[in-house]
Image (tube, rainbow, N blue to C red; front, side, top):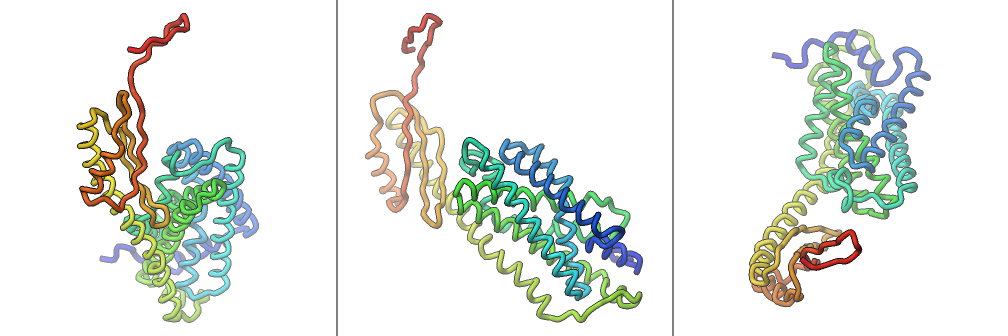
Length: 340
């Protein structure tokens, strides 16, 4: 059974006109693209700054970046150089626009927006292999909905925009905050999704026989060279490297946090303190574990904790410990304070 369905010459013309933005008035299509993308960038950046998932979802609905990305895939399938260059230029120009909006809005914020203070940023700066899997599925959704005219046009837009505009906004915000490692992580996430969407879109259109149908109906089709397809596959391989490194780093951070947590819990029990948080971070290969503990005076024995870490085989792990003194204080309306 052909899950793509029968693709007709009419479908090829419809798809070409849509993704190349040549159907109807070209100037109106382009102006709509830039206006919608600008608004999407503002909405997405505002949602990230406010740490609001609902607002970021609003940016998904109006973001039009999926059109030139799928246009790139269609141009590769038809081996048409000019539409491909135009689509690539729209993707690149659109990406720079969103990054610029993120950077400018970051400038007016009283505090920097980065992964340490914002969950929307934190969720987009440490991509792993699972993000590539999601991106591949996203590309299939976009291409499938494009080939099947009966599927709602909003489906690929919602599926793809969630993986494109928010990471670009994060790049701008973290660049303004001088958090360059986080900017790089968001860039990798964006690049992963673009590469996956182009690769899966190209594959599905080839399997659907778009080239042969276009040739038979007199639509312009160039010579598809093997090196072009190798280049598409190479994009996935290139982005897979930092994704694999990111996955390995995330696993090692989790491993370190678990190991330190075990030692910290034993230390805290002996000191009659409480461990409230253990997190691991990676700064370009330099791993650090942060430990937060709370307890009553006198000061806890930090040297004992270091010795316990060394005895547990964690002698090469840097640990930043934050000790918070607890206790209850009653602040009466008269202005006096008494310890509880």
